[in-house]
Length: 49
Image 1 (tube, one colour):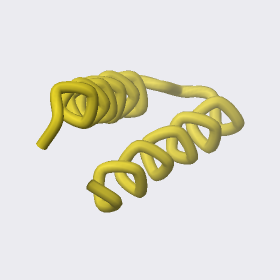
Image 2 (cartoon, one colour):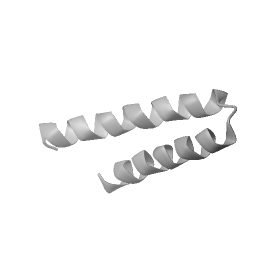
Image 3 (cartoon, rainbow, N blue to C red):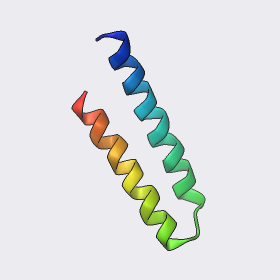
Image 4 (spheres, helix red, strand yellow):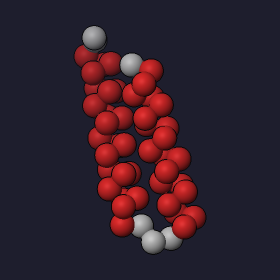
């Protein structure tokens, strides 16, 4: 794995975890949907590596 790929993987892990934490405490339904989409995006990107 190249250094750039490792950086990308770590970025997507960090972003996924950050958005999951926000999702846990979010009360607004519309914002929750937006956060779920972001989590799904980062999970998809991680599955590609």
